[in-house]
Image 1 (spheres, rainbow, N blue to C red):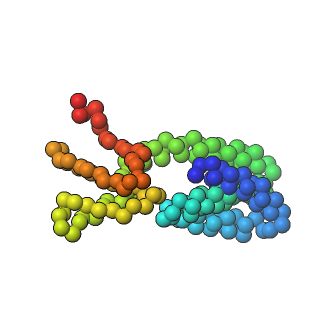
Image 2: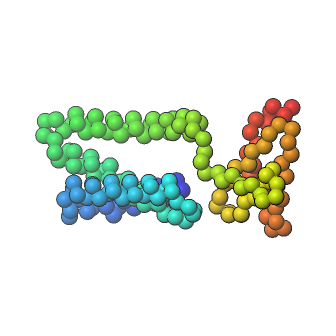
Image 3: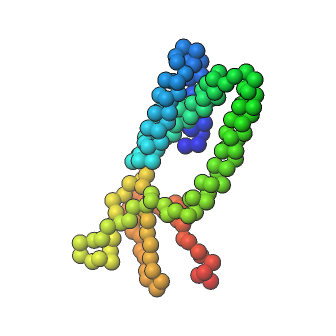
Amino acid sequence: AVVLTQLGYAAGLFLVLPLRDLFENRKLILRMLAVAIASLLVVVASPTLPLFLAACFLLGFSSSVVQLMITLASLLTPAERRGAMLGGLMSGIMLGLLLARPIASVLAVATPAFAGETPRVGPADPAVRFAAYNEWQVYHLSGALRSVMVLEFGADERDEKVGLGNTAAWD
């Protein structure tokens, strides 16, 4: 997803920035921001991996709008203040880039993951749960102390990755 987003950004720089000479900058910026918002909403709500990846590419593509904003800001600023304005603008962009990862890490740790689907209760025994298999779905399985959890796989299925929590506490 990260590579596709970066490829989208490169494509946006290559294809959109030359359009600033053909179209009015404000309208182009507003359209690019609308595409960025729409692609963010699709990234958040995409039910399938191909749609998610396409939205990531489109998000990167529309993120090149920042370069259009820098150009527009320099055109709207008087020549005697242009250097100070561009310095402040670039400082803000760099600060945002540097702080984005630590802030995202803090938010990721502080909020629960909502990608998991909890299997539903079976018709005969409430302790038995079922989930229809979907290769792109993350399943949330939780147990309790002194309980047994059995996962039954089909003949062609296998377990690839398991998060087990605090395994050091088992010793």
